[in-house]
Image (cartoon, rainbow, N blue to C red; front, side, top):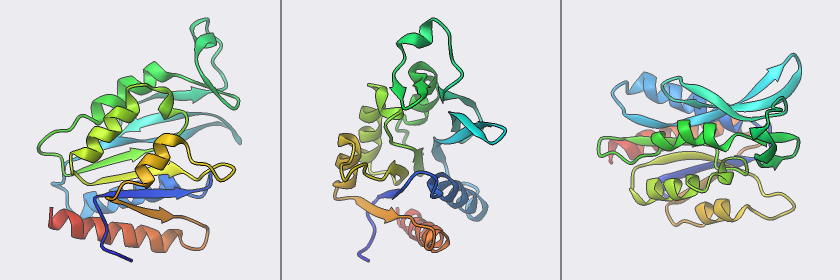
Length: 192
């Protein structure tokens, strides 16, 4: 593999472990380099028993709020966009995610999990992602695998960026990919 750029994109089908991989890489980085200044967020499933009822956005300092849910029935939510059976709470997402994507001089790394259909309902989100990419600060992000062979336009733009290195997860390579991404990030951060 060629030397990695400053944008590491993790992709793969839903449920393959993209978020888990990103969290494990983040934990390993924090353990090995506690002084790193890392900004960003990840998304995780919200479950009631065995059923997935939504997703929440979690900042790296532990703040969290709804991203999407099947259990929202307020008058306001009737105007919210849908992704499948989920209603996307764009304002909640923006209130947590957008401040985490502000480019600051002392930031060592950005984590964005995920640049996907729900997040892209925010008209402010993708421009913020592009500012992060243009800042030249290393970025670790997850993106969905193409549906029916076609990427979401914003995702395609990230994947085609010359700074992007794409890691495609499957059930047999998840652990090896975590190690590879971790060591490539450590090398990049030491030389940044």
